[in-house]
Image 1 (tube, one colour):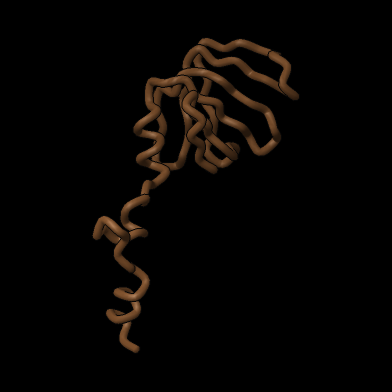
Image 2: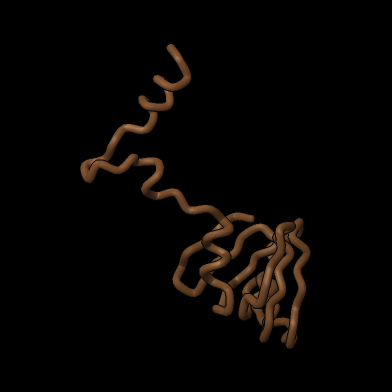
Length: 103
């Protein structure tokens, strides 16, 4: 079977005529752009949570936050004006609207 035939078979149209895989496709980059300037919760690999406003991020998933609070085991431990989280330490980013992305 040719690769073109295989591709067509995997992209079965949904009821509205759109390809099902294309319909719900949303990249991590799209999510992060949508939550820029909004409150987020970033969970590190260590389990520590940082809650604050997402200020910016780069291609390495380094995250800068403002008005940040640090939570360890659910308890507030520190407050920071600005915070920088190196991308390889992040595990998950949650927005206030309960959307999440694994980093």
